[in-house]
Length: 308
Image 1 (spheres, one colour):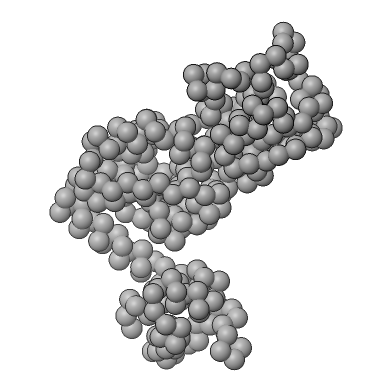
Image 2: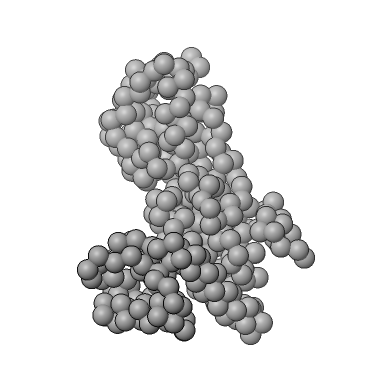
């Protein structure tokens, strides 16, 4: 039994039981993956996978239990490396943040700038994607931290911590009918074409729920994953935009008008998520505190169930 065999099993599961994809991810051959898995099964005395011909179709019952143990063992192996690295050099290493465009563009710059000043030798990477994908990156060990509003706060393998709360704003071109003295209402919004986030992003579920409760059907003519794309099409006159308030910059967006919509849509929380059981380097705690000052090391450890 060896770690290579366990990594091959784990990657096969991660790749949806596709041996070809697992081999590609591991930079090896499909026969080599199959052979290593078979050897581990022979040593354990149980079959991990159900096979139909040369294809793997599902995990066996003992295979499900084995995979859980493999995940823990490989996580602890990585934790061992991180622990050694922390004592060898506390100021260098790598930190990967998985997040959405809005967070990367508007929420992270201040924290990232200060972090790089404090830790110039730490290799910092920011990976962007949809909330389900960024959650998966952390679960699979491809990222250290996930930051998003949707999805990540109810993933079984993640510990989600509230990062900051925010509300929506409506953005319109100057002189638009909505940019007047009358209070903004859902009924007034529903009379205009709307440009807002894709259903997986940045509080879109809250927008849908608000209109549904009011018995209104919004005319959403365009949805996007990128706040800047939404603003661009509002400037072109294609509709009114509904955005995360943090994504509106008075100076950069001076060609648009902002209308507060906090009274129309429920306040939202952006979460920071960590992999359950993962070892955190000292600089990781510092980055978290820079982004969300309330989340100091003591608070993070408490959420992770760790004692001082």
